Figure 1 (tube, rainbow, N blue to C red):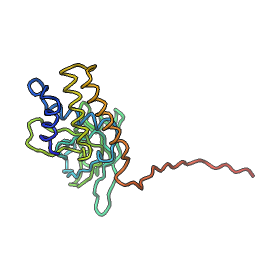
Figure 2 (figure 1 turned 45 degrees about the vertical axis):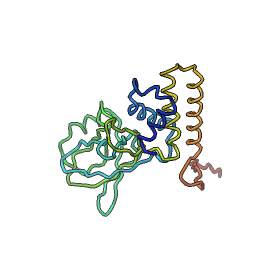
Figure 3 (figure 1 turned 90 degrees about the vertical axis):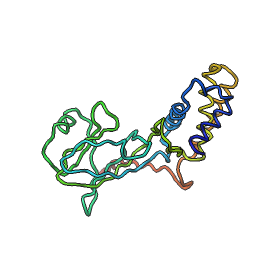
Figure 4 (figure 1 turned 30 degrees about the vertical axis):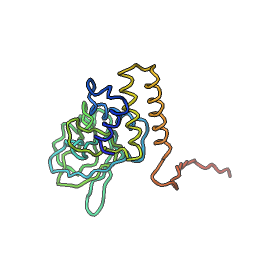
Length: 220
């Protein structure tokens, strides 16, 4: 389904109760994000390429993917031909201040998120131009005035859950949380979430592997 088809179907199934008083484009985004917050669904994992320019140290993550924000970074690799180098995430305040003030150009080996931001990333100023890869967990972030009809991130088999989520919110606004229509739509929404959560990976042969390292003690 397209974005407009989802919004229109939600409208039809709720007797157009939210059409006049609710921004349905914003509600659409709200429900997308609520679905994605429930679990790290495998289809939320995203990858983007980027170019690191010599001397620059601050970059906008939101410019890397269309209508998708990085909720969390899994890995960043720099292409240091012929190798790839994984960069270390920095969390402590002193190092973050050092990176903010750094002027010496180096081969970048670390990164952090700019304080007060969620989509601005900092590197040490690079000594040359590099390519790189960022892998992370994506969060839908569509603009309300976009002409794009594609639904960001959520696959086609989850579009019914978006419809149910929008219905639940519209009915709650129109009739209150205790109304039978609201309750029924909310139950349908929650069942849709359960169905999405049941598909753990893109391949049914996936098995979660845990490795435990233990020190062996031998008596002599």
